Length: 361
Picture 1 (tube, rainbow, N blue to C red):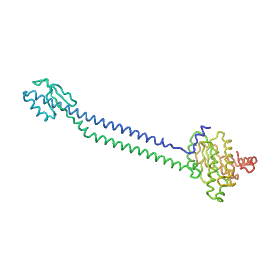
Picture 2: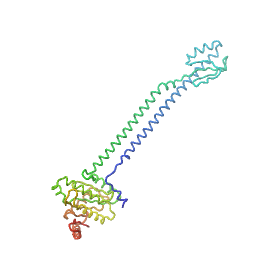
Picture 3: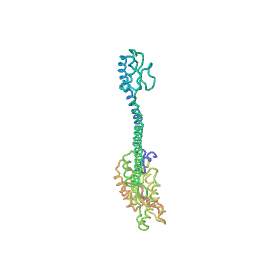
């Protein structure tokens, strides 16, 4: 029974954490994407720098090879003047002859294999256009790109917070729209949604329509504020008769509807109806004195598989029959008028003096 009764909720719940999970995943993906974009940006800049420098050094070696071809044909005394003139023309900085290959990080060398200069090396300082571009523009461009990425991420985080706040407000508004403003109970809209959900489920449930007797004189004699206090107290008393997880709604005026799950339907529902009648019949503390009201109930035993409107109509018809029995009674939907009258007479015979009149099936 506990497992089944737990299936019945007071109001449909919406979890903002679950609702926001897709957005949080998108923001996390944006963070990861931004980080990878930053890494890719820096790696791309370094790759471009290295590629540019490599191409530049390859071209320098080609130009140095053409100079070497010219130098081997010149007399010894014309080599150095020729190198001083050809170096700037070929774009080779610090072009010189050396006895050993270049050792510096940015130094290049080319061996001379023939002629009087054979065994020596042409050396020059490599031009690094890629490094120049990187050191010139990266310190300003890369941080700027990272700042822009950070701004996008900050906007995403702000959007997430805004959506979280909006979702919380939406849920609060949704729950408020499903609540009766006076008693705090679910209203008719929430009731219809719960009936539709349960009717399409697998657990059997019963529906009770409840209407107060002798309530109008309280409003007429003591005012509507006293009537409101009486309704609040009645709602609290009726709620106390239900099991945890069962559903009680106020659908307007002094009308209530309960959705319950009891294993032994007819016997347990009869006991519940009697308990509700007895609980409501005691004097109302909120109004004062010996003022009390009664309550009548119409009961639909089996609600599974029936549309919400059908269940409410059946419960209302049973409630109408209970009202015709002078109030303080209950009827099951589908019982005949004769059965209802006989059951009412049996209850009158066994009721305590001054107690409420109860009809049992």
